[in-house]
Structures are given as C-alpha cells and as structure tokens.
Length: 373
Image (cartoon, rainbow, N blue to C red; front, side, top):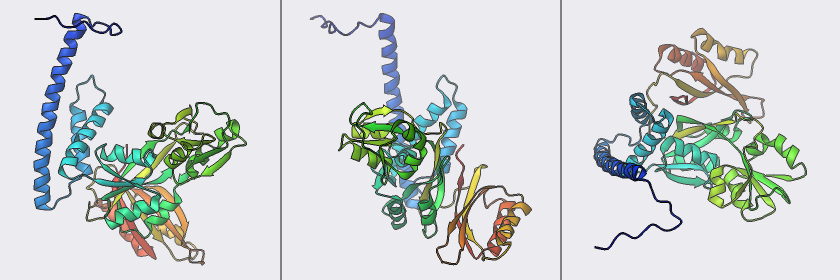
C-alpha cells in the first residue's frame, strides 16, 4: 500500500490536536445535515396539511414564537442574535419546500429594501425586483407577489411620502415591519475619489449624506435615481460616476468601496413595512408589543384635528406617529397618518378606534403588526 502523498509545500501541516478537532467538527456537521433534512421532511408534511386545510403557509407570529423559544433555550457559547439568524434561515429554507414566498421589493439586487426582506423572510424567499414602490404595491395587490416590502420612514429624513400616498388606495394591509440600520458607502469602479463627476443615489440617500458630500465632493453633481442599487448598477457602467449604496450592492456590481458609512448620522435607521392582501395573511394576533397604523381625515373646520386626538387621550392610547399629506382636492384638506401603540383586540384600543372612526370623514386601518424590538 502506497503512503499518502505529502501536503503541498505552501499548505501548513495540521497538528494532531487540530486534526482531531476538525474530525469532530466534520462529524457534527454530518449530524446537523441529517437533522436539518429530517426537519425539512416534516416541514414538507406540514405544507401538505396547510394546503389541504387552506391555512397560510407563512406565519410570522409562528416564526417569532419558534425563534424566541430557541433563543430562551440557548445555553451558549453562541450569541442569541446569531442563533436567531441561523434559525430564521433554517425556517426560511424549510418554508421554501412547503411553498416558496414571492416577495416584491425595490430593485435591482442590492437595495436596503431587499436586505429588509431577507431579514424578515430569510434568504430562501423568492425576491421580485421592482423599479419603484408603485410597482411593489401593484405586484402585491395583483397577487403576482404574495408580499411586498416598502420603505415608510427614515430616522433622519422622516417619512417616505410616496409610500404614504400609495397606502391610501391599496387593498393591501401591513402585517409586519423591519427596522434596518442603514449605512451608505461611496462606491465606484476605481478605489479613488479622484475624477468623480456625479454621485447617483435615491433622493433619501443623497439627503442623508449631504453634509459629507458637501465637504468631500462639493462640486460633484448629485443625481437622484430610483434606488441606491440602481445608482450602483449605473456607476458600474461609467468610471466618472459614483453611487451611495450598501456593501451588498458593491459586491453585486463589482464596485470598490471608496468611503465607508458616510451618512451624516451614525444611528441612521429606516423602517420598512411588510404588506400583503388580507386573504394572504390576516391581521397578526397580539404579540404584547404591537402597532396599529391608520389614515383618517376630518372636515376642514376649527378644532377638528384637536377633536381627532381626544379619543386617544380619553382611552389611554399612546400615539407614536402623526403625519399629514394633502388630499389634493384643492380645498386645503389633509389626510392624517397615525400610528398608535396597541392591538384592536385590546378593549381600550378598540374603544379609541371606534370613537375616532365616528369623528372621521375618512377612516382606514392600514394594519396591526408586531413592533420591531
């Protein structure tokens, strides 16, 4: 029997202890693979039962319960956040065997909207890329995608007004949210900032980086585009252009990161809403930490807005957001977008909503959903 060939000269020889530990890891990996496939087989049977009974395949409240239970049982040394991320991907992969979830997002690949969708649904979701939020709403409302993810608010620049306007007439409702830490990077085909003629990004990103751009690229054109990833895609076609986008977009389009995290506020977060048709997924059950979003309007008369807020105070309901948008009637009328703490199944919330509805000329609940921790 011939002896095993020696390892290549440039490859270090593992010590006996290291070799033994690697064998242990290989054995554990095989056990994990066997168990994961056993779980997947059970998930397939779950999918068959759900299909027969007509129940939703994707249940975010069930996902949250499973992950919470696993995290509580975690003895370490793995961090709970990492355990949570691992289990979300395991459940996403199993769900893809039951019924792949089509999720519409702002495209192209590499947007923060896509990242939010992956954080919520896991990497096995079937992502549908849309040119703008109008298309995301249309894809979700028409049923070509089961879910959609849209930006609704940034901690620095405030609400995404187009999303608010689209919520007004859509048949979809909000069933979840994702709060994403947003870091904008300067990307281009070369590793240098010399010779940049234009910076391309979504208008919100340009606004969130305006101080940095004014200081470091004061004479460079700022060109708004439909998404940051679209800016990265375009920057990859012209060496004189740069983009403001994520590291994911840099990888997607083969760009250098010229400057990291150039947003003006370090704690820069964006809220994304997860939307779907009510028959795809009903209002989630109460989680103990919920938000209810609604749109109302009142007659244009003195004291009307004050009267609108009285039911919330009267029934002890906390309001966390209050935004106005023109009704476009030419009569200086407005729609008010309100977020309140709580779930309509709670008596004090139900009482406040009923009274609020009786005072409103227009009333629409956009959705009730668990708040992101």
